[in-house]
Image: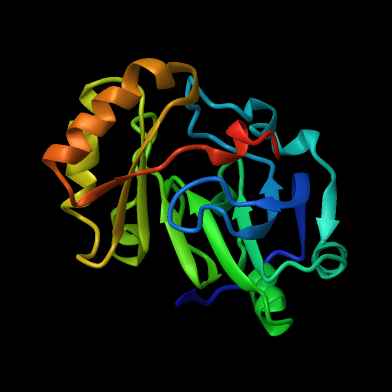
Length: 207
């Protein structure tokens, strides 16, 4: 578990929050409560949640309100995502969640300093704004979205920088999945340290 101590933010811009199944990566298929924070300056051209980019568009929710929402479900796992969640200091939120017994996961591009206390860090580096070097050793999972052939080289660049125990995933960009999934399958067969991540939630029509 990775922990960074700072002064936490007591209210956060929340685009949406919901209980569903984790659709991607190592924890795929697990029940999870998602908290999607507003605000992102990475600017992926293929982003499927561009409404999250402007934090000012989304209402502030207190940690108490978020805890109440999560606690009203059977969730054990809470995933903080965005947007880019590390644009906000997440110490207070994760401390409160863990104090109630929840496991805390984050999905991040790594483009902002790490805050919060995490059971699992999914790092998804983006060419539009590269991750900070200091976050790389903390990643439990490296998930690279493949948009074109050059993304395999990008993936290997960061695979060489994360810890040896970090899980490695290649994930087709949704709108180009028909074209790039066969390329990913062939690549993984030649480089079996990688695994395939699919956006399961989009296939089964859950958030």
